[in-house]
Length: 107
Image 1 (spheres, helix red, strand yellow):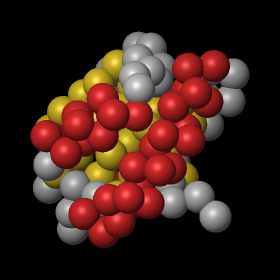
Image 2 (image 1 turned 45 degrees about the horizontal axis):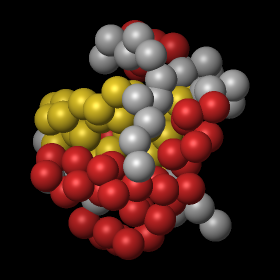
Image 3 (image 1 turned 180 degrees about the vertical axis):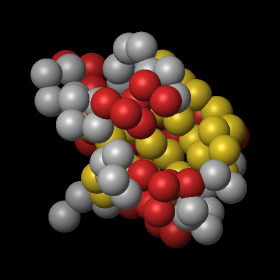
Image 4 (image 1 turned 30 degrees about the vertical axis):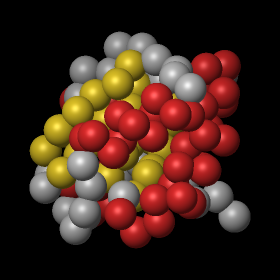
């Protein structure tokens, strides 16, 4: 079972904006190679960090409204949301260590 949940336009507000703690959103698509490349790293980070952070994926093809609202131009784009606001953004694939450091420093 993946530690990374899926969200969509329909539940973005309840799952991300109204979440108690920080949420990392991975904007991705099935056809995106780099997106698939970082998926295992995000799974590992989600498992390692446990309740400290929630990591979710939003498929930009299935949920274009949210992607366009936050100006996602290229994928993967990762964003950290805190208290309903975007706190940090990272565009492009990165090694697991860099992703983990970015997530930790954004919290």
